[in-house]
Amino acid sequence: MDFRYDLIMDYAPLFLKGTLLTLGLSLAGIVFGTALGLAIGLGKMVKNKWVSLPFDLYITFFRGTPLFVQILLIHFGLVPLFAGKTEPVTAAILALSLNAGAYIAEIFRAGIQSIDKGQMEAARTLGMTHFQAMRYVILPQAFKRMIPPLGNEFIVLIKESSLAAVIAAPEIMYWGRAMQGQYYRVWEPYITVAIIYLVITLTLSFLLNRLERRLSTE
Amino acid sequence: MIKVSNLKKSFGHNEVLKNINAEIKAQEVVVVIGPSGSGKSTFLRCLNLLESVTDGHVYIEGVDLTDKSVNINKVRQDVGMVFQQFNLFPHKTVIENIVMAPVKVKKIDEEVARQKGLDLLRKVGLEDKANAYPDSLSGGQKQRVAIARALAMEPKIMLFDEPTSALDPEMVGEVLEVMKQLAKEGMTMVVVTHEMGFAREVGDRVIFMDGGYIVEENVPDELFTNPQQERTKSFLSKVL
Image (cartoon, rainbow over all chains, first blue to last red; front, side, top):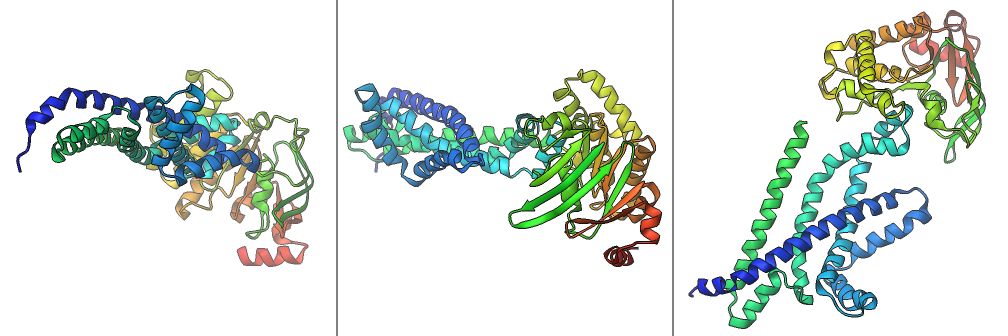
């Protein structure tokens, strides 16, 4: 079997463009997903069942159905409903953010609830409001515990952004499939794609490890 | 200073406080004793509304805490609390633990709060631990920091919920010493404890609780040497 490096070089500019879009999709998913996750996580923790129910349903839906199905629903259903036409990049960002939001909500909730309730009590007996106690006592401690699961979620999100290829968002996997279709080669496109993903995810886990270590020594 | 009338507290169907009436005067040190499950900790936690009250009233300096319009955060600034499990903030240093509430809640200047915090640490004998993290302290030191942290808000009342129960025996003394000092300075204190020696020496009055009721209350000497109720007698015979 000969390995055609020249074909990879031909496609290199396209892979580069694809990589940038993958990074963009992932970053948007992480940012929006985290913001959404915090809001939904806090919503789910509200004691009143009628208030927390919609948040609960949201998490149930987005965790209980495949991301692939969500992408198709959003791309062919939701986005055209509002925009009048399909819009692959928007649909991909929307689907990734909404999906990540559900998982991140649970990470936030678990992180906050893992803090001993004596911490909240001590803060409240000092006269702090619930908000102040959250802001100065609970969240800083919970945040440290959330880093490892958040890191996992971010890595999953980067990898799952490859599903956007099926709705023709031109990220890495899209160009991999295009190359495969053009040359009828299997190894060159998909090994290249795999290596690019590995580089991205390894870089991220390296950064998260450093952050985690820095916070634990503080 | 504190007045409790017809206080009832249930957790679900379990009625923990059945009908509590009590009054605590300024500068008085009241010690609450009783078997576990008697409701003494719940009673204490109702005094700053850490537990919601099922029925009845709790007045702190005439303010009815069960009145929904009362700003409980304001009241709590005057009512310090010390817990069995210390509950120091592990992500903050000792001095940061102490200044956090004065700075964030009372909006006191950070440097002023810091100086005051160091004074309090000196008072509890831990000025050299100002920049240490709670995890590096012994249990007795943690509890003394917790007392200093509560005092930093300049409360008028201090509540102690079994402050020495989680300590190794040799560290109980140093915490009780700080509490004695506080009592001597005229702090109004309500102390739930199993330290009968402390109750006897420092308490102005001892309340014996059992089964969700105040069974008997009296000055320590009377209650310990001449208990009137059968349940008090049987409890004291086991712990003295």
